[in-house]
Amino acid sequence: VAAGRRGAVALALSRPFRADDVAYLEAFPELRLFARGDDVLAARGALPDPTDLPLSPFLDEPAPASPEQGFALARRIAERAHVPESDFPVACIVETTSGRLIPGVNVEHPTWSRILCAERNALGTLRSYGIDDPVRMYLTCTREPGCTPCGACRQLLAELTPEAVLWMDAPMPEGRSARTADLLPAFFSGTALYRTANTRDAA
Ligand code: THU
Image 1 (spheres, rainbow, N blue to C red):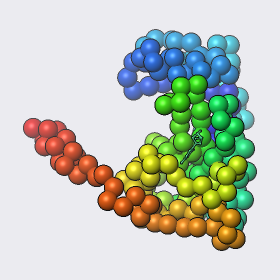
Image 2 (cartoon, rainbow, N blue to C red):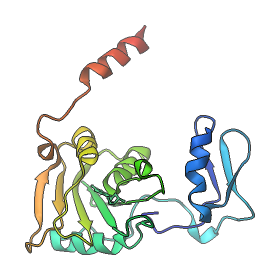
Image 3 (cartoon, rainbow, N blue to C red):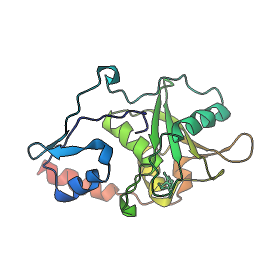
Image 4 (cartoon, protein in one colour):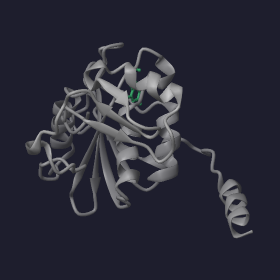
């Protein structure tokens, strides 16, 4: 959604789809998906648009030269947010050390607990594509200048990109910035969980 692409024709999962996965996806009628086997959902009647390929996570834009440029780009990307429930668009753009940009927008669902925030969508893309060098992020809520990440996003930002600097689109001309780990002091860290999992794997 953040890449501005439409017309997905199939979804494949690393495990069989569950009924709640299908129920979730059915809330996006434009996908027109139906089950083909246990782990593939395909769109009825649609064909791939060759101009839509390849699927790249990066924006075709140069790295912003200033926070203000980063916010201007984020505001443009926020127009892609899928916000039928709240009409409250949010966009988060992640910049890597080499100046590549990965976008995320909020994607809403009638069941509010299933709403995906812009920041976590961007982080999900980062992980999915194995991008491990984020340095900077630009966050905008176009209807609420000065907004900051929600608690769940702060937790994931602190866990996955603790050193990245988050620029928040605030009314002051230069915005407001923070190291992401500083946005959630004493954040939960599951070090012992990872240790347990590794011990289990080794055994
Ligand atoms: N939202 C985000 O995308 N990021 C945040 O950090 C806070 C909230 C979205 C979720 C929902 O679609 C809308 O903003 C209103 O809560």
